[in-house]
Length: 255
Image 1: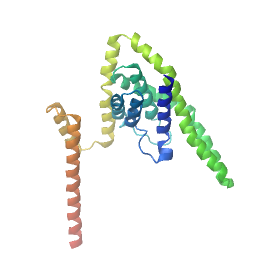
Image 2: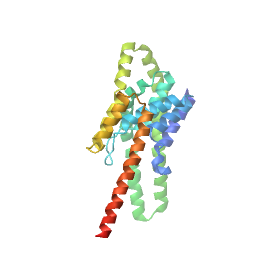
Image 3: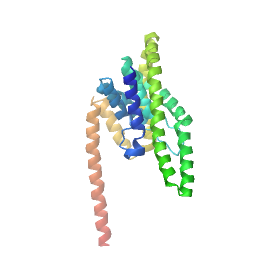
Image 4: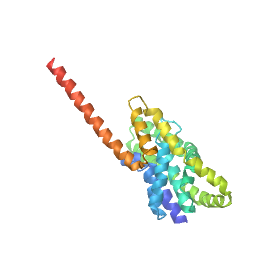
């Protein structure tokens, strides 16, 4: 139990510092985090499914500004995947836990590594004004350790304390309540799509949305099939727009 909790926390900590040391390889995304946690529990496919569901929920969320209050999706996906795979419950339960756990992790962040990082930044600024490069370097590495250690600690404690509690609650909660949670959680990916559409929807893209709906609702096409058709349409539209731009450029040169 402790070793699995430790490994889940280690994954969360490493993924959390992705954009601070590795150049943002996107390993902090729920799809990757869920899959890695799935390997720890010997079920990478289920982990990938949970991560993909979490990805659908969170892909419409955009953080604007330094303190946007976005849910902590990296730690949330690690904890949710660990809870669900450790207890053997269905993947539907993971989405019901996603937002509460992510929001709680965000709150912990505002109380720990975020204010500490601000203090380190201010200290590094003063060191830069004094020309003290050694202190600047120390602050840099302490900030990196800060963004690894506290998320690691949050997930480790969450797994050690929360996982047994979660397993107990799943056993004592009546079946009709858990069934209701599963039904409600199936609506959350649609919420993620709705949030994304608020950012990207326009009259030009509307036909493609309804084409995808027809493929799924009336023709029974799978998500993979719709994705392939969407990729083909994207290539056709891209090539068509490039051809039109080249014709306009030629006309301008003739004038």
